[in-house]
Length: 292
Image 1 (cartoon, one colour):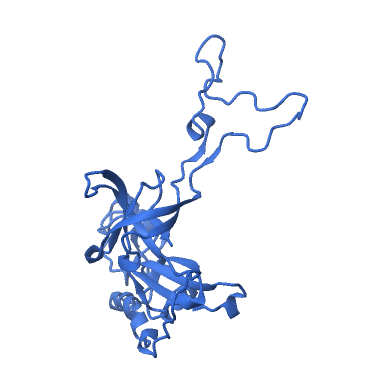
Image 2: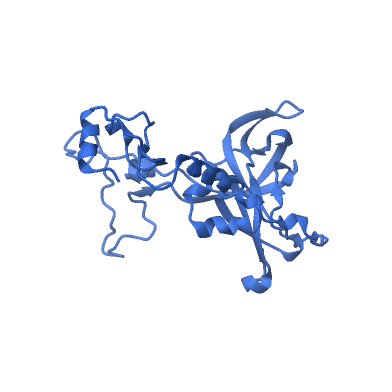
């Protein structure tokens, strides 16, 4: 590491001729120093040269290709679906709201969702899950292998797919299993199908009753002192002499799993890996959604 005297010299802005052995991305704010590096990067001394660091980064991006892909083995037998079959879903990114018009000129509000880098990572049969359904692990949105734990990166190497930013589990029937490494596209759901969507709402932190529940509040004048936005009395009389369960009170707003069922898929844009879903989603949802 740099000596304390050298760092104090950098803080004073005095130019010093030195060549650090590597340039490494760290958590130190580089704006405090007179350095040519962008914010978020700093010089850290190490035995690795700059060429070796670049090679490690390039190797991490293609390391999953060094092992034979499971798709090159003998393909799994495709079974016939029944009415009780339950197949896998996909992970999509919410792009925004898009208006659409039907043939009759009726305007409908839809939500554009994009399926990005979605692959099957692992499959567990009912014997291993000890349940009625099988488990299918699906990952989406490629991530850098340098910023994840080694155990997490090795989990994707067996399926010969890049490291994913999001990994979810779907409960499926055994006749709808998919081989690890299988890519999933927007055409997984055809127009006219009904899907269920799960996602987390945007968190707004700890909020009062006026913003959280839309309450009116107390009078703005005539004796009201520092109680304009407060909830007021919350208890009952002698019976039951307590605060009833389910009383709307201040607390955490958002950052909760929300579910919407029976949304009709209206259109698929296979060229851009995007699809639109009829009916608008809950306002304030985050990026990645689960479609099944």
